[in-house]
Image 1: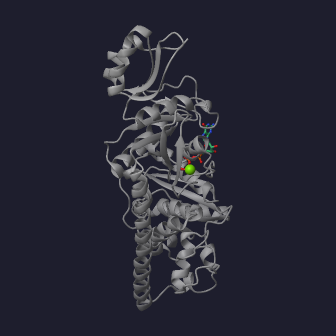
Image 2: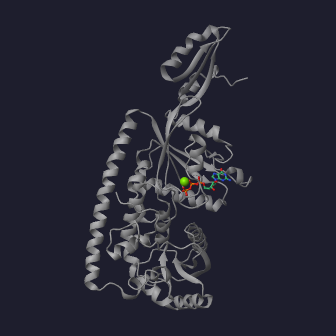
Image 3: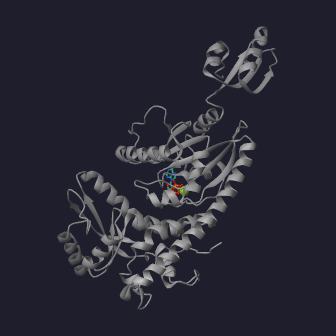
Length: 445
Ligand SMILES: Nc1nc2c(ncn2[C@@H]2O[C@H](COP(=O)(O)OP(=O)(O)OP(=O)(O)O)[C@@H](O)[C@H]2O)c(=O)[nH]1
Ligand SMILES: [Mg+2]
């Protein structure tokens, strides 16, 4: 297995360009801590959307260790094929960069083609990256397991490698070579072959890991324990929830994409219901297609889960809640179809506006304080039991015989006679049984 450590896509590519297999010693070319960048977005009509997206780009940059020095939005009907933004705007950014003196990077809020990047770097005079490269960079920093690292490396080789031109301070640290010289025509061709071979080798390694994963999954399925995947926008609190429920010890951080490698833990509720819970990689608007593809084996956890727990940060504005839930919904649809039982959960309700309107059926919790978690667990148990509801029954002594009909159709958790000869039963029932035995329902007290 390749050992690539905590390195960025750029670092991977520098190794590739040097034609070296020594992955350990290469220069780390990640976005340096404190790198000041100008953020650039194009607005083709939806002003609010562009601003929200730019704010998100800023937190992505912060997660990668950078800092936004300025933001630029250009209104344009459609992107310029050569330079994405207008060339006049690019010159304006070049002046901004020159006057500032401390800006080393421009981050564009959209995918750029390799030639657009090259043209923009020429015009602006600093390294240019796009949204996808930034996300890949964060993924490269956060991948922990061999599988996660491999998946990131493939995505980087496919996406980032053709886009690195060698411009900018970080790259020039390699000392002569990459930035200044640029590979000649035949060098490019041999590089491409090298790249293809490397990708094929990585894909073979991934396929092997996928086989292992399948075997594990089959073993779990044999045990007939239901599984639930915790899914949601990045930073919604998925890891915090799994930690609260199972002491999983997963890194939970106020950073985007803290978790890349899925963790599965067995949860046994107080009532003895067992469910396998998986915490997985967070979603984001316009999750780069290359990442979805590269992370297929990880994201397959969703496809094979029996239940989806859709977590949303309920402490944000109503617009943000709606936007992030919609992004997550469409990714769930894409990745696992829409036919699984799904629990909708708003998290961080400890920090939510008390006036916040919560749609019917949504479970409100705080993974941090534990508030609402018992109610959530009850709903989860009911879902694990195929939508059956847990209910307490009390059959008076004279009617204890009626309980046998309940035994026949419900899943009985416990039952026992009381001193007065009455019979108490706790069972998971379908709606029709709740109706049929309504007069024996015991509401406590
Ligand atoms: N106030 C509050 N903060 C929370 C709650 N749950 C999680 N957080 C915080 O939200 C941040 C993100 O939590 P994580 O559990 O890492 O979120 P995640 O969904 O796993 O994020 P990714 O792995 O990046 O996709 C952390 O700083 C948590 O402490 C909550 O119920 N209330
Ligand atoms: Mg996480």
